[in-house]
Length: 117
Length: 108
Image (cartoon, rainbow over all chains, first blue to last red; front, side, top):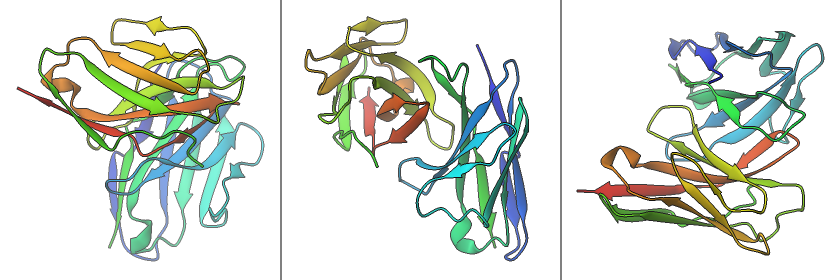
């Protein structure tokens, strides 16, 4: 089946630095990818929709200048957490529908655990 | 905003069927019902989806009521490895909005 891969699986960074998380579709082209955030013992919260070749669309309350999304190719989307602070520590997950024009399953990456110290 | 409601937790004996309910009373006509599960610190795993007919695959069965306002995921023979958080979510225009999910505890 189709696979979505995230890198890194976990990262620890110092407060004030920026961290980039990659999301790749390994065997299909993803014109659309989604980024979620999950705090401990909570559900996944949709942050933004990443569109290949155009600007990302952000959900209400998500700071676009803090969470930079780039979808430069059909197989790669990146999420950069800028000037990270401890409250940004979370589990970040990306997903991609195999065919956004039809109702198929969306594949999720394995997630990236970000810890800001 | 989450459009589904699920019980926070359920217990099930190993080998028995696990029936997980989900309420989605505000579902619109073109929204599909999807079920995913998440084992601790991993990405969600697809289980099954449907529009209005009941569906079955190698993992589970999905029963959707005629009015589509609720559904039930059935794991026919639960194993200890099925212990996870199960999310019922609606899918439209490629977006999933996850509710709080049900923590299924399968006990020996």
